[in-house]
Length: 162
Image 1 (cartoon, rainbow, N blue to C red):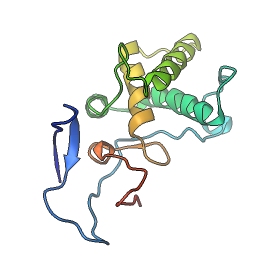
Image 2 (cartoon, rainbow, N blue to C red):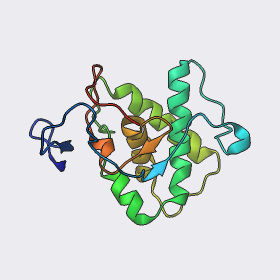
Image 3 (cartoon, rainbow, N blue to C red):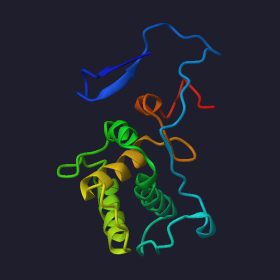
Image 4 (tube, helix red, strand yellow):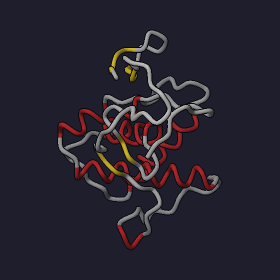
């Protein structure tokens, strides 16, 4: 496996340097951070009420974004730097497909900051970026990886996550 710039998108991606066969382990790594949107208030989930009109899927994303922002208080500067390098949509000119997630993240950031959260070591831009990275790159359970999060997704996958 090799992390390099994709000629198609100009972003970093993971590319195979060998042929894999069924049953092969493609990559093994520990997550940089675990952010779960499905936690209850008693175990530290955001207590803020989601904005009206969101679908259940959007509510889960919104809660996950708030948890991603909260998690920044517990990560090292080195971990933050690795996370921020992962893909996230443009905030200023998102694609048509990504404009909804950017809008949701901006609303979550507004809620996060108005809820009294003080993150003096992280800028609003970094918090927004973390929310978008989480939304676009996390695996089940909110796991964000340095390399695995760069693997392309597919509706017809030829790889599974364990």
